[in-house]
Amino acid sequence: MNFFKRFSLSRDMGIDLGTANTLIYISGKGIVLEEPSVVAIDRDKTPIAVGEEARKMLGRTPGNIIALRPLRDGVIADFYSAEIMLSEFIRRAHEGNPLGNPRMVIGIPSGITGVERRAVIEAATRAGAKEVGLIDEPVAAALGAGLPVTEATGNMIIDIGGGTTEVAVLSLQGRVLSESVRVAGDELTEAIVQYMRKVHNLIIGERTAEDIKIKLGSAYPIHNEEPVQEVRGLHLMSGLPRTITIKGGEVRESMAEPLSTIVDAVKRTLERTPPELAADIIDRGIMLAGGGALMKGLDMLISHETGIVTHVAEDPLRCVVKGTGEVLKNPKILERILNESARMA
Image 1 (cartoon, rainbow, N blue to C red):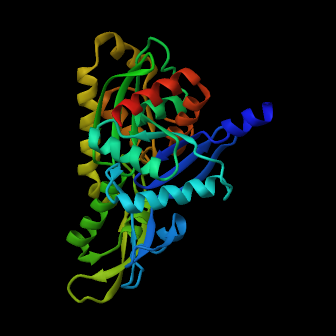
Image 2: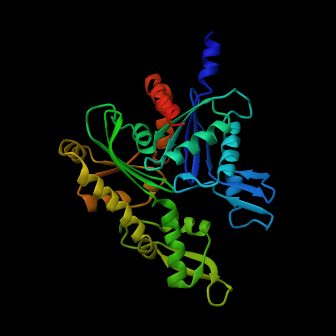
Image 3: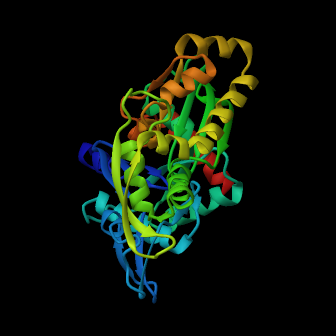
């Protein structure tokens, strides 16, 4: 009997279905998969590659193959590709072993519409889920970051992913208020692409801009001496390859507008926070989660703009998927989320 109980529990899955990356947690095993949310298909819509292998094809495919990201701004933009990707990731997570239809808890942006929520449920169901529960990403991120969200105290979390930034004030396992803006890692990358085009007349791809963001990007001046990097691209006027050198200060300047949008969302949320919860947040500080939290100096920028100490979660990239794992461990919360999502579907 105990064997069958363990076998059943092992099928429960928590998924962070992100714009940039998808992570999967399995009960009793922990995080078993972490792959880029990218799919490569041919013109006949036959899957060629999924995950890291497909990501390497971005911007490098021949005419008969398309490498794409099924999610944009935190929601499903290409339903067919999203279903292919989820099915393949679920198969990999179970190491190719068919374990029946699992229950799934999926983290989603808090600001998406009912139609977008139903699209996630349908994609997961078609990918093999028996039951699907949706949890708002800020709540999952707070659970994964170890914030005491079950207590009657105010907790503020900022979850910056690839497509959306979620700002939320939480207390007693729920959102008191939140704001979701579709400005996050992708917009920071695109801002670098546009800057290179306008200022240096250099055309670069998404992967090059992402590399610049990771190596040189910062949200706040943190070094006396700015780092530099050589960048290769196509010169806009001549159409020929060219190499230029850029400084970290330029990258920070290029990202100023999207970063300002994120900071404004934080300020608006703080302005609407009830006084008692605001006092708790001042005492406890603000928590940063998501891949965007890895941006150097972002915690310093938010602290400077709000006057509140800002912390970066211990493992920001995995906070949401760890939070779904916490839900799977708690039968009461899991049942409530599954029931709410069933009514929505």
